[in-house]
Image (cartoon, rainbow, N blue to C red; front, top):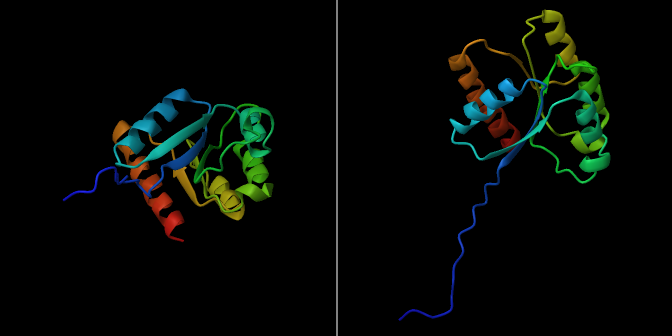
Length: 152
């Protein structure tokens, strides 16, 4: 005999990964979204298209005063007006973002960039691919990085 009025809710304990993307190229963000969808990953992509927006987010100003802290920040090095390095230094000085891994991506293949970024605490440096297949690989790279961050 079943008891009436008893309902069991199955709630997933795995929440969506919140990924903040600071990127001024909408096509790259579109491809990133597709690459992540292919990974069977629950995620929410928050896109900021300028360095000014990124600084407001990091400083919790205006519309971003109560913004949720991301699980991962993906930062383009070549933004207009502000450099990725400027934004990265600001992220590293924001105490509320202290434990958030930052992944930098760029079309630059400069070793100087890579060395400087490692010194600034970047978790991963990704060279932006030119082909669609390589772009899809970024989804797996980010999924693995998130899995490592949540395990640690």
